[in-house]
Length: 82
Image (tube, rainbow, N blue to C red):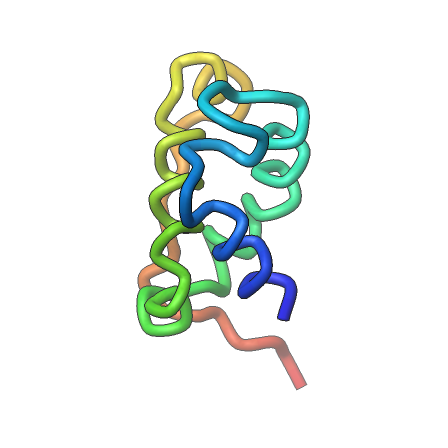
């Protein structure tokens, strides 16, 4: 449900609060880094195209790269150990 709401929020905006990166974008991208790298594969993200667009745009910015490095999106979900 949370990703559906986030995707809807991004449907008519480049960033969460408008046309510029704000602290809101930095905070939410930071929370999504590991899920996007380890769990959220393309199949899972298919319904969330606005999130993928926004996330890849944010992590592609030089300022993000200077702090977190290059982000490689998940190719295949890493399952939790039982």
